[in-house]
Length: 493
Image (cartoon, rainbow, N blue to C red):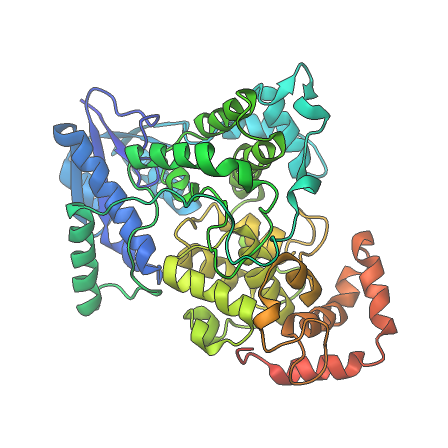
């Protein structure tokens, strides 16, 4: 008899259970090693306990201090799938050498095996997402006709960049699937309350009703509701923000996907079928497919391709520690409307969609020169869908350009004009996106020019930054802007 040891992000039916059953482990050390968001702890524990309840006698759930302690308590060898972090991989390797782990199988949690990505990467000088995405579409026979993309284009990105509709506070779209909490959730909440009182854990963020799916049944219901009622509206406004609509038309499937409850191929096949059935426009379907088997899998493979030291790259020499108000999600200390709402969303739900992450939180951090390794840790622990493999490429590469351009061709920084165009935040904000000097100067507008000036020498070889770097010389008040932002320091805006 050899049980399958499943980690807490391997909980779907496509992860082999086998006739000998599974081992599930709640490791106290794993829960306490970082200041995780309260709702993230709830989701992981709820998912583990629900899976154990579903499997009944075929599952053994052990609650121990460490994974090794649980395996010794079990007293028999186990099989495992490839884990999703370097730390877990090192642990599994040690256990394999000691005989506690009998075998390590490829993970079925992603559509492309690590060995196959390595073969695709080969000796390419640059690993661009667009190239990988086309490879994935062709390999999976997804929205293609022969070797050509359906609709004549691989990407409909240009059609999916509309600003939010004017005069509304939310999109005219049915709300996302909302799970119902049960006795297991109540037990988890009681445990977390007790552990917090006893000083066992020190979570950040607020508790709240569970928003995301943690069971296979819930995940399928969330997928069905998104594709049936929301996917059509997803594409046009996927990059837009509204103060009164935190979910917009996004799928909210990142949590069940990252818990392993959904197979990414079944997700994109479901979306593609909606297009073929004539129910959803191609641009929306393509934009969603690109997120799942394009970007998500690209980030997964870059985690392994770039290696464990990647997250410590710091090409722009950003050294500023995260200020307490940012680190502790003190949204009430922030007056800048877009940053207040983004931090509030992280505090209240442990989640905001990709534009507040990239163009508000990440943009702010880049402009202020926050340390990219500390910022990566912050995103991993504060976001309910953040994992060790998820955030390095997203933060170090995409958001902070700290890898010197290994994955993105330019820094993703912008001034207030972009935020004004793509959101309704600026209209009610005390800061003016058109101003860069003065008490009401937008900290993103001023911060953008200060960022360019500070990093000019490091970015001068980047042809995509040549124009903005040259434009800064036309600012008669550049020195005043730079000094103003220096004096603002790490105070909340």
